[in-house]
Structure formats: C-alpha cells, structure tokens
Length: 163
Image (tube, rainbow, N blue to C red; front, side, top):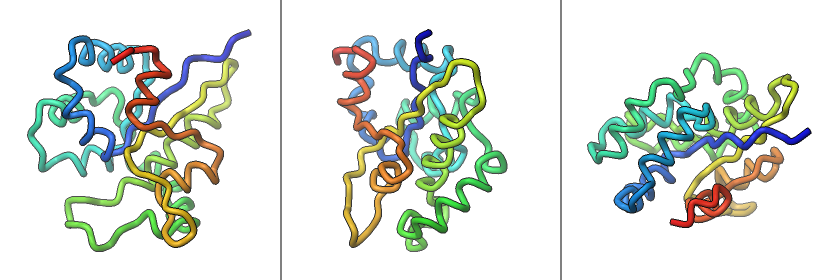
C-alpha cells in the first residue's frame, strides 16, 4: 500500500518568495490543485502575517479558507513548540506579525501524527535557512521534530512541477 501524497504547510516567508513565481504559467492551477486535494495547510497565524500585503498571491492565500487551520486547533502544540524553541517567537515584530513559526511546525506535526489508515507526510515549506545553535530557525526546529523542510525550488521539484 502506498502512502498518501504529502501535505505542505507553507510559512509566510515562502509565500513572500512565491510572489515572484506565480507569473509563471500553470503555477496558479497547481496551487489550486493542492487546495482541492486537501494538501495545502495554512495556519491562521500565517494568514494574519499576510494581512498587510496586497499582492494577488497574498489575497489568494487569504481567500483559501478551506485550507486555513485555526489558531485554537493548533494552540496546544504551538505552545509546546514555542516552549521548546523560544527563538521561533520574535517579540520585536510588528504587532500584526504574530509569530507564525511555532504554528507552522505545530501544523506539520499534527498532520503527520493523525491516526489514519494511509499516513501522510507533512512538509514545511519555508525560505528560512538553518541558523544553528546560536539562534533556532523554523528549519532547525522542523529538523529536530523530524519534519522535512523544503524551499520553493525543492517543493516544486518534489511535485514535479518543473517551474
């Protein structure tokens, strides 16, 4: 029996970088396909971080309510992640930027650990790099929690989108 195709939990940084890629023919349809298949997860905290931006992609993400995961659903695990990796919460950010990183990692863990017949991997998509021991990034926390992380190029390659 084959595993389900992975779900993708996309961080704010990746959405920001995708603004330059959505002009490539076919990208919108591919993103729509992930939403339709239930394979795109956007924590509500990411939606909040995208609120002040008005690029077509930011509006599209805000409109995809079927793939938004509410804060209340993620809070217990996100709290645990924030306690384990306090560097993920940046209190110096503007007040509208709520610090989505613990919620992104939490969503991936919750999706990965769902009790289902056919398991599905959850992959975090982020533009952040590993920071190492001096400051933990979303990629470092994901690695420690055994969650794979992709950048946009790796995501598209994994999906065989050839963009």
